Image 1 (cartoon, rainbow, N blue to C red):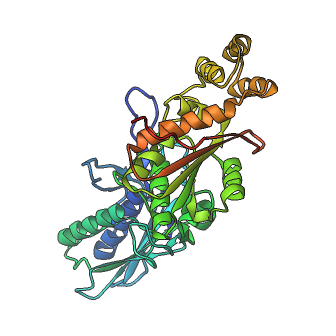
Image 2 (cartoon, rainbow, N blue to C red):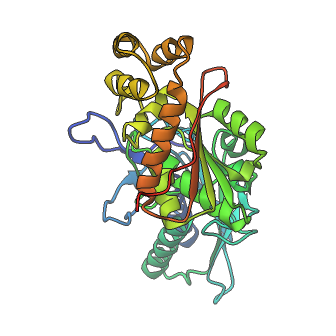
Image 3 (cartoon, one colour):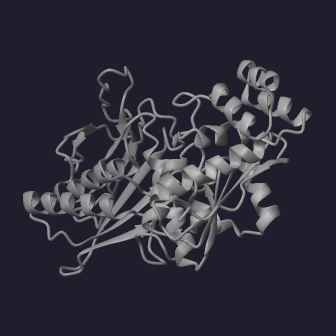
Length: 381
């Protein structure tokens, strides 16, 4: 085994100054290509170049390589360090290994989960229960590169590919995998091979897979929560199991749009008052960098809930959404209920008539319920 320089070259994103990076699927493909090439030729290509689904051809330096001595080794291992660019990805810096073992002709390509790569244990994901958590696109990418290497160097293309990630089981505890029923480690992911900084695509994909798993488990009531505090509130209120809880974060729109296409009977949205006031105002991305609490909007809701002109003016001038809420609470004006009800109406508008009953719960930072949506009124004939 030898140590090499790490990482693949990343690209600078136009207009942002941020570096893109590579998915675990791209890293696994690079490692697999290098290992299979070494098996057929005796030499590891370093750097190793692969072709991504959209035609980009990045080159990856190998971090480790292993080829048993002797004239006809039956396996080889290569490893690549994942570089996620400037994205705050928990797998940044992880060592992704591929061990490629020759199989008898006609065996095809077989995938195995090595240490640090999870196994699917629940239905609803794009992989069968019992399969290693190596997603379909990375599988296709690895198969195509195995075929190319085989054609170039006289191989049959019949191989077993075992993907491992050092410390992957520990890293996976910071991901959705345990909740989705992917146990034992990380998933090997990626549809384009490229990680775009702060694109949040992985989080949104996890939301979608969470809905799929809940539906496959027969859950008819799911909850989109903005954080752990709101999750605890929903569990206390409705007794929902873990696989019915969607870690929505700031992506209310992602939850609503996916459930519009894949309905459940009931959706509870639970989150902090300030975040849900943004949803009430029509924002589907609740992140502070992309939407702000509109105090003038809160003042209008407060007026509708019974606030006088003086209180409405105080709400408009409040420093924060929470401060506006506290002003109203002190005078018996139910601003929290008004926000929850308006947020429910906005959610129903995004659902566009999908057969989903929606309720909204607003909480403060301590997890105290400060607002609930009313039952929707029937349309005027």
